[in-house]
Length: 268
Ligand SMILES: C[S@@+](CC[C@H](N)C(=O)[O-])C[C@H]1O[C@@H](n2cnc3c(N)ncnc32)[C@H](O)[C@@H]1O
Image: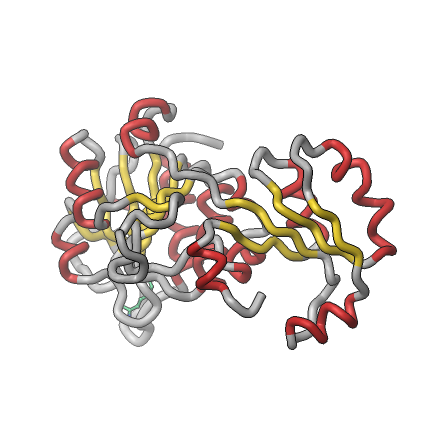
């Protein structure tokens, strides 16, 4: 719990809370272990017994757990899961129903915002999320929690973070390419790459065409989308806002964009 970088290196993640742990146990993700207070054991027993792997189940009171990890926990129910290998890009492009709806994030470092964005992607039918090499992992504990476990149902392609692990593809769940390279590949395959960018007066959301294959790129909390990634997109699109407001939270912006895609595609 105190060493998230080690979890990432070992391609494992921590799920917390009864709902998220339940979703993990119901999923096809590999589970390493579960830790829970004894009072929850009977509730979880059927799910634990149905798991295909030989997982470890630890019983501990919330109090002991809080002593061990050094901060307070809501329910004291935790599990460790394995981050799967990412789907190959050409598999996502080739096998997903058309028109494609992909999302990508550039330099998004807030685990909470990333989790909220994952939840929106799952809710609005995005077929995959590309996590740029300068973003944090959507498998960080707080991100998994904020996604409400929807990270378990959204294909994720994490691009290997530069300089963090060597060689770059050291951990098995990342793909060794940059977001700019990935967007180039999408464009070459006819997928329009649209930057969600508050500072453009060229195109507002309702004027953008989302009826064809597209990938929507979202930027970071501080600086938004980097110039290189912006230049790698076909165009920038803004949600109109009054001049005295800088921007929306990225999770809120993603919900608005993805709703508009669904509206144009008459998905409801
Ligand atoms: C908090 S905003 C970034 C603000 C940053 N100061 C900037 O200058 O772009 C985080 C991300 O949310 C998305 N976003 C927020 N407001 C938006 C808007 N009005 N139109 C389009 N995208 C928006 C963009 O992807 C943006 O990079």
